[in-house]
Image (tube, rainbow, N blue to C red; front, top):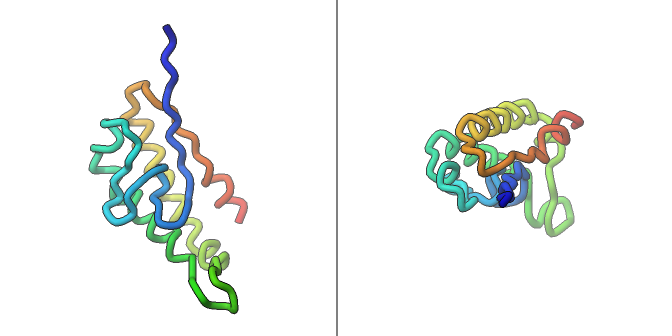
Amino acid sequence: MKTEKQVIKIQLDYLQGPIWMSDIETGEPLTGIDVIDNDPVLREPNRRVGQMFSSYYEFDTHNVPCWFDYEKEKAEKEIMLDLIAQIVARLNEINDGSFVVEDLESERLRAL
């Protein structure tokens, strides 16, 4: 019997860490996979990326209810890419064979 591997997405969204899903305040991943969710090394880069990305959103500015600061994202893309690379490397290091990593952000960020 073949077991489906869980896909761990690296994906940016407001109030989320890049490991989908995460607690943005603590950086704790909420994947349901113990080896990921209980790994203290992942928490800090995961928290930092989530907070950086969320800081690009502004509310009730620029004459719109929600505005995204693309220039700030572009200016910080190398920091984001480095942190995401750390996250992906750590996920690959601790991978027990039960999951695969799908990075949906690095290529997008490099293209900025």
